[in-house]
Image (tube, rainbow, N blue to C red):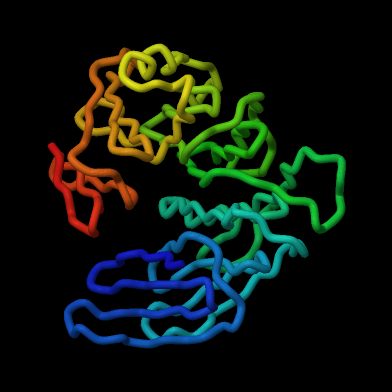
Length: 288
């Protein structure tokens, strides 16, 4: 199980065995490779000379991108049991801040220059404080003022300066939310497409997508699974785990439904207004 990030001419890869690699694209060779013994379990982030990631014991690592040497390791709460939730990292390069959500339900703010903790807050709502208590969430995202934390039970907007909870919403989020300017876009587990204004925390719109899906899919017989949320040319695109795609206007109005040429087997990416993804038989599909 690999986590990959591209940074200029370098590809950095971590895996669930505990290896960390740096591959030079221009020279077509591995620059360095280290084994940290404990499986890595987070997305990767890069800033300045640092590569940042976390392992399954909820420790955050700062790695020198050129040499592979560990600059600092920050331990956080460790749990004895593991679930499917991976630690989540979100970077705010303008303010030199890293936000880290671990599997215990704690959100940390870390200064990427000094590699020191600014504040932390636990968002696990369970009354069970046993270290084996499991927490789950989708990937966190941040804007200029707040960190959006989509936990398994609620959505939190957390002030990135001091860690205080600005607003809490009692709905769970299905896939990674998206922040564009001052607006947060998300899909809930009960098939709602929602937009929030981050300055006020107010809901701008909330539309039930089930009525649109029922026109094209037999949703009473099949559980709808979402894969990704993207915004392209002021339109919202919602990818389903099969080969289907929903299109909404930026204000939430339904526009169209598409059947893609192949089932999606990767996270889709946007390049020059084209949607690119890995499909059946490891073929690359370009849709636009």
